[in-house]
Length: 214
Image (cartoon, rainbow, N blue to C red):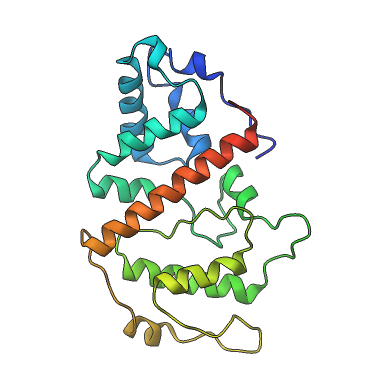
């Protein structure tokens, strides 16, 4: 993240004559996706352009809040596709620069053990079975990947032994039989979608802070 070019000054961005300049900025703060490029960027530009100059965002935190309002008005299918642009927790390949920095061990932390990565792979698969069309997103906020494991297990109402090189991973078929599936559009599914989006906006604001921009 430290090698990424900072976004332009907010006062320049919010007076852009077209949505084009919004796209690379939003990709930097969020994650690249078709909904970001084809829905969020043009709609956010239109929303901001309709405001008087004095009412336009004066910080990137305010820009993110306005983007959240725009996304909140979308159909849940578009919201889910937008959320799914974020990488799965525990992924180690094809990460954006921002995600790579967020998922990497912090100073003093050990490299994530292989058994923890395997557990996260299993839990991500189970989560996507339990909440069809969604992807588990959480604001890591300095936590290790091992510290994320209980959070996903709690969401899935699973109680599993801690990941260990000496303990075989539970069979996926057995775990799937214990899942409570929340169909797309159900109350529980929508609540989880909203939770994921809240954490996604928290991640975006954290990225702004790390870039040192107002």
